[in-house]
Amino acid sequence: MTAAPQLSHNDTPARYLGQLATQRQLSPHTVAAYRRDLLELATLAGHDDWARLTHHDIRRFAAKLHAGGQSARTIARKLSGWRGFYAWLSGQVALAANPVDGVRAPRRPKTLPKALSVDAAVQLMEANAHGHPEPAELCDRAMFELLYSSGLRVSELASLDMAYTEGGNGIDASLGWFDAQAGEVVVTGKGRRMRRVPVGAQARAALAAWLAVRPAARDGGAALFLSARATRITPRVVQTRLNKHALRAGTPVHVHPHVLRHSFASHLLQSSGDLRAVQELLGHASITSTQVYTSLDFQHLAAVYDRAHPRAKSK
Image (cartoon, rainbow, N blue to C red; front, side, top):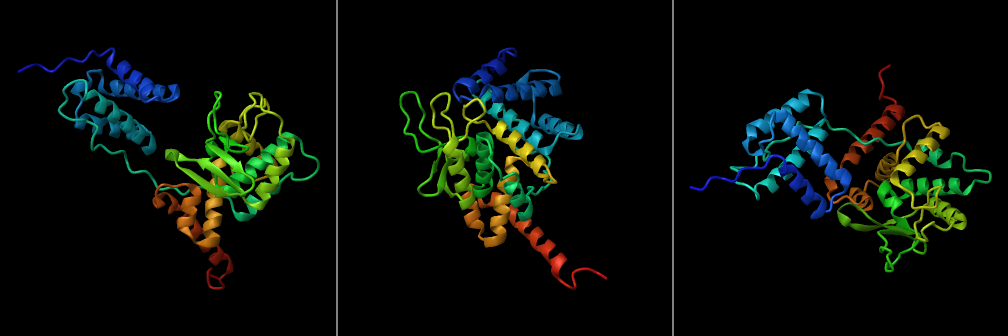
């Protein structure tokens, strides 16, 4: 019987990480995260003889991470990374089984997304909307109105072009764009799924005001929203600007772009009750992801009941 090939401890992770970078074309940031997770696995085991680890070992490591205060989400991510590594390793050496298969992270506490009240959202949108704003302020107003109007992810917002671009001459085809004539934005969301989302009247007006003063992009591109350096805006810059705007507006909670997406979904569901429509507008692949907003809607109704019904409160 031929003995199973021995692992070369030093280069096994390096070969796997190299495959992630070259064949799967993952970003350097993502590859670095996988590397940290493998190093942590080796630390937990006290060795890097990957083939020796068993299902029992992995369960014990997951429990140790949980006892050390790591969140269920973080542990689930690490288990996923370890599982992928062993799936690759099984093609390199003989393994009895993938030791991570069947190991689950601790159950995550169910948390509801944060959403602004309708009044708070309107106040945030209308704050400082007077006088003679500078182009940067008009850009901010258009971005914030569009986030709330159409429930976009911040990455979808940042990828928008002024109109559809075919590509060519080194320019990529548009992943998303503003269709001014139709009053819609076309975006590419998770899983490369494209969808059309209506743009409300206030957001269309804010976009028109911004486009009237938008300077030429430094690279000559068609990005809808530009940074102070006339380059395509990044999600991080959008987040920073929105946070500063919310502080100036006196919004009582921390506001980031996803809060506006949650507010869009919650307010639309409160008014329409159409869960399927909200699912389509948000770009959720499964309605399960959208159903969390039914809890938000119930919270809204319960609050209205408590305030309005004469028998809701004890005397």
